[in-house]
Image 1 (cartoon, rainbow, N blue to C red):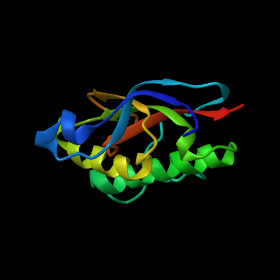
Image 2 (image 1 turned 30 degrees about the vertical axis):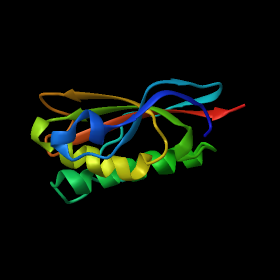
Image 3 (image 1 turned 90 degrees about the horizontal axis):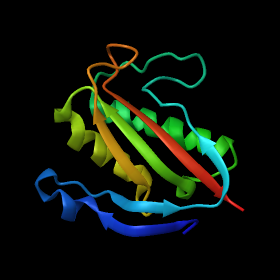
Image 4 (image 1 turned 90 degrees about the vertical axis):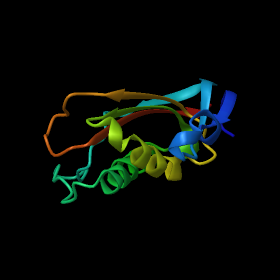
Length: 137
């Protein structure tokens, strides 16, 4: 593991009613080159074209694919992700979004904060996720 993940846990114990399976931590201690990602939305990185889907799962896949691509373009790997902030426009999408996000952070254990907002920059967006990664020294 690239960084010290303090108090690791899995959401299936924390939120048993939501059938989630995300590896998270209460804190991450990291040292190295920091990558701050802009909040990623369900759109193409090149050109900014939205994906066609209004499904929270498909939108989350695109968001997480963008995060993975950007981290790798900056010289990192998903295991270097230390923090994610998830913005949802509807709390009812939480389980679907977190299940999908969990596919990309299995074994990573970032810290995570979830926020429900009134709207995102475009009305068709259901989810936005920003991430911070640190490439170890």
